[in-house]
Image (cartoon, rainbow, N blue to C red; front, side, top):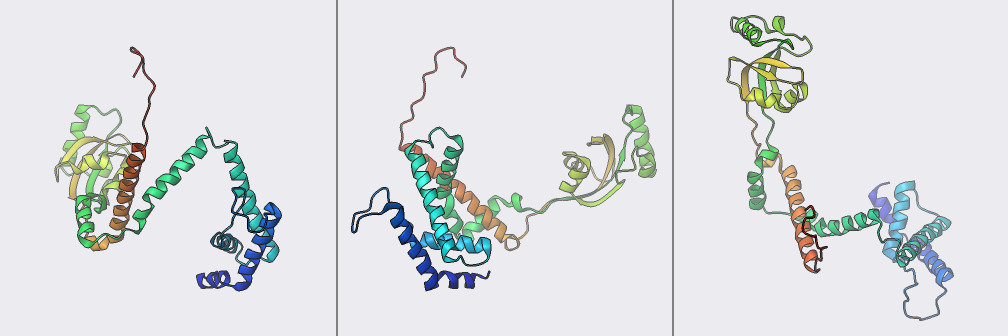
Amino acid sequence: MPVTRIRAVLASPLLRFFVLGGLVFFAYDLTNPASKQPPRDDVLRLSETDAQRLVMDFIAARHRTPDPEEVRGLIRDWAVEEASVREALALGLDQGDAMIRNRLRSKVEFLAEAPAAALIPDDATLEAYYQANAARFARDGALSFEQVLLPADAGPDEVEAVKAKLEQGADPGDLSASTMLPPLVEAMATPAVERVFGAGFGGEVAALPLDHWSGPVTSGYGRHLVRLESRRAGAPPPLAKVRDRVLADWRAAKAREMRESYLRSLLGRYTLELPTIADGDPK
């Protein structure tokens, strides 16, 4: 449902009548307060904003407006939840529950870092952050190389013999112990090389001298002789091309800073008492 239509529905006087009318009658049935009594802790008070949120959630889920009976049901469900939570807290059911404690901690940390999402740095600030973290946004380097997978039991003499044949111009495909791997890799991004050959292989190949059969270099398949034809180092693109990514990263960093600052302040309000560890106990 379009946003404008939802707003129109929420602004409808009829809908507000249903919501507020249902609230009044349900609250009366639930609490039956005396006229002009001051607010009490046992009153379940649903604001107009929260009532509209209940209706908006219904519309988002059902793609239609609720009828009066459904509005009353929404209000009752809210009241049951609110009353149940209050009762659980009164009974201390939240105490000692790791899931509840973790959830409450997460909410506090979210509130501490939430303002970072609305921060808008000036150009100088964002540029400075980008320069300090440019490697994070750099495009991947690329490698071009030939490779020969050696037999698993190849000794030093056999390795040198294969290398000599390659230096004399032998076809790498004829000497490789496997036809599954490509004998020639052209301009493949280093992360892709690592995915094909195994972690660490791309970094080792990138460090080899150019135009010379080197190795053995170990991959997830075994040992290889490799001739590196070219390497292209990764380079950071202009800030304008990755501005959205940099801004998101900067805000995430600010959120972490806000969270840590708040937690330090929070802990500063308390005195930390630790159990005494007897001499000789493991630290």
